[in-house]
Image 1 (cartoon, rainbow over the protein chains, first blue to last red):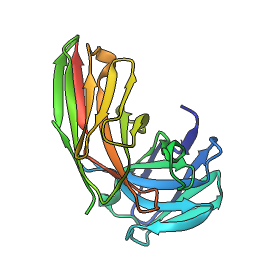
Image 2: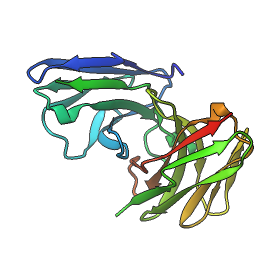
Image 3: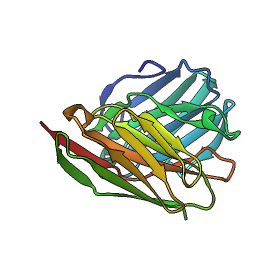
Length: 116
Length: 111
């Protein structure tokens, strides 16, 4: 339950605001992920960091800016968001790809974001 | 293109009424298939990983099976606390750790 933590749990922001989401993992992993979950849609992978380097950016708008200062922390900086960006933002962590059960991704509780 | 389809979208069961959830997948080389449980307002909770056709895993009232095209999550004698959305995800054998998720099955178990 406390392996991956996210703050804040809820966030309401206007379209001109700047805010940041924080994720911390206590599992000794070296890969971290940001996902977006919208109603009736599959989880969408946004960013992947492996060994603190960004290895994936799935065509995410530049108003979302990730930061991974070390293998335990991940941030998602938000600015000039749109109402359609309202969703549950999930952080996950795993071991870096090498094959086997260590690659299982473990998720945090998410940040529920509402953009007005 | 990697794809995951889950059915049914929603399922209502009486307590004790066993059933199965389906996850059909298309992937360019399966590295692993994952089942997660998600309660409202929470993040997905890991249940199982399956790696090869014929593999089965069990946990309490849940049993996951895998073929070359689909996976089933069997729920035996469910209880109300099993109510949740069950998510299936596949990982392709491409060297990346990306998961492709289905839209989930929302299970409601009625006392």
